Length: 393
Ligand SMILES: [Zn+2]
Image (cartoon, rainbow, N blue to C red; front, side):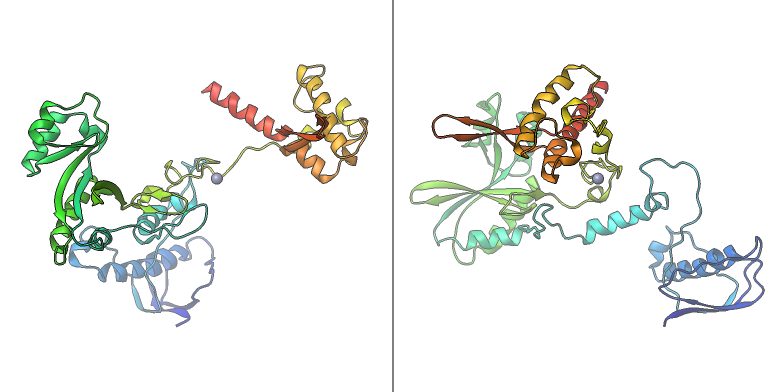
């Protein structure tokens, strides 16, 4: 169906009108004030779309939603679930967007957090995560007879209160902990708890890899993940020595080490540090230095007023600039009296945005080129602005 057909709409001012609206198109309803534009758009179309959507939900869900009245209309065909964005004014701030003002953003964030597939922001690769079942199959795949001590790391805050931690663990039926690498019974641990215990792990289970042992292993892995949430560790007996391995359940990219926890709606909010772009902190605007503002009198040599920069005449920075521009000109095979216009693109890029600068000097008998880093005027101006701002805070 490629249109929405309305028959006999009589809501408010409407006088039994029939209208056909194309779907998938931007449609504008116009007319003099009082002619029934809102009655058609909001009180008929949206009201019916919303009503049908709510009716499709369970009685339980329905009690939380506002039920709209059935509009006065003979028939509407081809209607989908509808959302309405009403006119709102005032209260705008730089962080407002159409999506936040209308609260659509709130719903989308929940949807994205539930349905999103995390990818590495640098490489774009899909992130993989290890679930309890993956840990069980990794351990079960070890040589039969391998001894395994399954450990669950304890969050640092909890390790700082040993009395309470040991009490909790005893109540939950655990017998041993591993404190800074040493496995102790809870009684011993209580007596000899180091003042600054760094790594504390609960010994969840001690078992031997054998066929048919998966069910118990699965229970223990679940228990370990309940304690830590994102990691389980295992000590594995290997040629008379113990080897420690870690199983991470966070989403991660094994090749870059990038990791992200459970996706949450905050990951999709530009008002949260988790979701905001680091360059603009979620504002969508960035302050940068416009190179043309640094130009001076273009009929003068670069070092003698061709670039006026941000400095005052005769200031120290002006003298320094006159010195640092010389190797840039030399690198571009220009004389010291060259004008800005004569500078090739790569010279301009170096001047404003920085890069590697061949100073023209040679060191020693090998005639090694001496290369220096040049910050670039725009980069320097942006850095100075940032520093000034952070001092002001
Ligand atoms: Zn940004």
